[in-house]
Image (cartoon, one colour):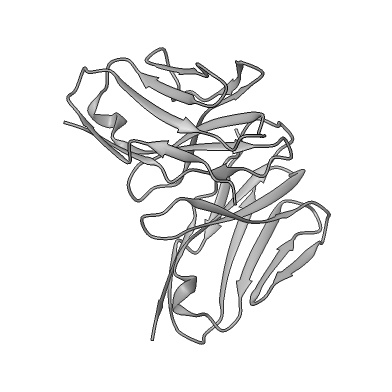
Length: 111
Length: 112
């Protein structure tokens, strides 16, 4: 089955520092979604990437889909304490039925 | 803004008991899902439901699990005979069809 790994598992940064999480798939993806889960909360949709090499920005967040559509990244510029949470990628292999979540990267931001 | 709701927020049950977790998906959505998350782990897919039938299920979703849409608004997950390892957060999600899924706040199930 599809293997989706995210690195790092955990990152602790000081407020103002940048942060990047990487998502790697063993298979080619039709699209990829990113979700954020705050501590004690539920996954919240952030963005969907569809095209090879696509780059999308949401304020301080930059999402990228690899040229080969096997990997993706999320970069946060100048982190804030509100960025704390676990970021999951959720690749879509083409079936409409489910999301296969990555292993997640837990981000901790301190002042 | 419409949202998925789930009840109860926390359910404690004894091993071997049946539990029913309830969800009200967003009203115009057609696809419904259940996921679970064991504490500290990733979110795992259980089952998807469309047009009044299961469209896909994972290996976790064995004969002890069932889903139902008993009326036009509710979507339920039943676990017939709970085991200790069923303790987890259970999330319901719904989507309009474009694969972007909206998650409910979850039900924390504790099996003792």
